[in-house]
Length: 246
Ligand SMILES: [Mg+2]
Image 1: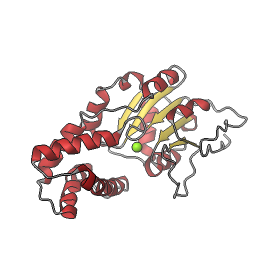
Image 2 (image 1 turned 120 degrees about the vertical axis):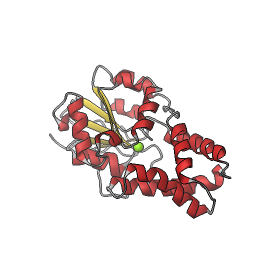
Image 3 (image 1 turned 45 degrees about the vertical axis):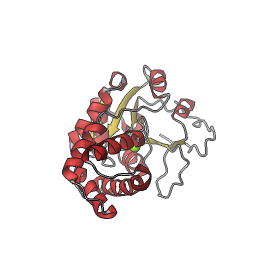
Image 4 (image 1 turned 135 degrees about the vertical axis):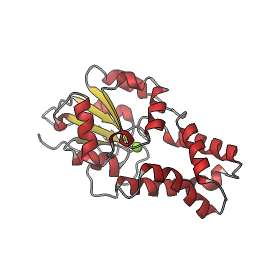
């Protein structure tokens, strides 16, 4: 199968000549289908308030996010376990800000609230309705099982999905190609070349999809610069742009 051109800067380049007919579209969840930042903000505010921690969103959120991001990257590289990550991020947040808190207790409350935060981006369900029937659709997410399963169940998403794979449940995470192979199998498919991975993270979704021999589509709504050497098959600013080549 020939390489397809990259869609850049919102140009509507249609995939060249040989039409590739995908059979399975694997979506990332957070930052792709779900507004994770909103869920995170809401859960942080609630957990800190309940714990009596003087957390100010404007002042402290970026500190938390940087720490959390760093730990998730470590997790992707296999450098920390999920259970440890949950607590460690609040420990580090406390160290960085000098705000005393009980990381175990904050973590428990945070996860409880986070699992309630299921905010789909506008248009997601409309898009899935259009894709359903023409493709099998699945979700591959790096996340904690109780949180992700509970959030998904609060939406209609499970009805559209041929597979929902949560890293915490299967013991491997993106960008390990094994998690994509598990998804392929669970969706009843066998050919990675006929699978498209769609996600907002170059290091987990795009790297992982490529590792598994799948085509990839980088969802890059804020036009971030690609500072990696990874070349996604497609790049889009809006999820609906998928319909230009699917
Ligand atoms: Mg994501």
